[in-house]
Length: 171
Image 1 (cartoon, rainbow, N blue to C red):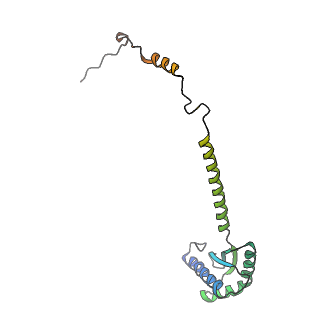
Image 2: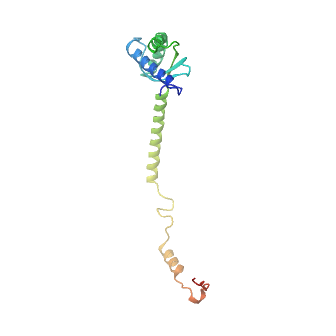
Image 3: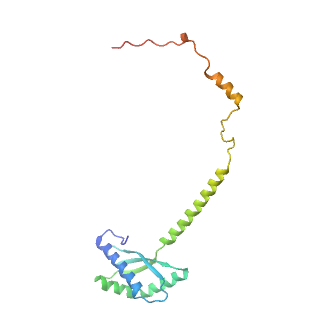
């Protein structure tokens, strides 16, 4: 999502800046230090005085430093072109920030992969494990079970020993 304010005008300015900067980086800026850059988001303050441009760079750590330097040196030209294309009286000052989201997502994926591997090891160990009391910890010897079954419910109570209260009349 582009823009940091809820104002439609500010969002539109942020979206336009994102397109303009991406086109400039692709077509006009020929700095050899510039890596493969993607503009991921632009946030503009509510008064449109400042624009923060988030970008990612495909490549190695050395590409990151070179790209940051190339963007910084081209900032003036980019700002004047943004002003020309936007037709605004006051052109926002530009700040380029490397977007940490891809690295955070990659780190999160690594953590999730490690958790999955750990879960698989635990599941494999649990499948091979045996219960301390055997598969059925309530298993009894057959002789004990026969004795208990006989004692439980074989006795019948004499019928006269149960006294029930009289029923109330049905109305």
